[in-house]
Length: 230
Image (cartoon, rainbow, N blue to C red):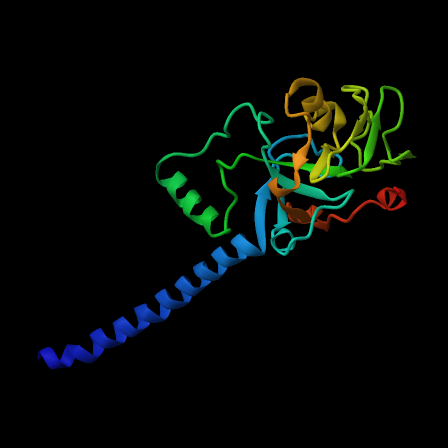
């Protein structure tokens, strides 16, 4: 009798192994992709409205910074809080659901609920001079920017006019596309001892594709206006 069931047990073991091994390989591949290639990021606020809505999912390219490529003007980037930009940590989920979400976010299959990261558009890089005055267009190195990506009705600099600012080497000047609802470099320049500059090494990666919701799927190219900046 025992021998009659032995082949059946062996078949079950092989079947289980056939499911577990591919799943483990898939999870490992997802972890490698998130760490070195791309990461899904959830838009946390309305500061990028005009381009991205709160709750949108974007694919962030982590591979280029890993290779040493630095951000360029006009790119939408995700970066770590340089210090004091976020006043409180995002609320995470507890319980079983929170544990599952955390596990999936570690391998890049779900967005993290507790990362203190921000997303803005790079307006200027190290060495650039920004001029941001109320009632005037934003200028970079003397070139006035035509900014069709701004949220309808938003003004370039009226909320936080900082005047003329030169970006230090190795840093970025970033701004939200919804200027009237963005505590970006302008706001930080006026209210934060750090001066509003983002160190290049704080950049996690460039947002390249709007993934979700599907009806609005699109790439996130550099606007043409930045090609004319000297």
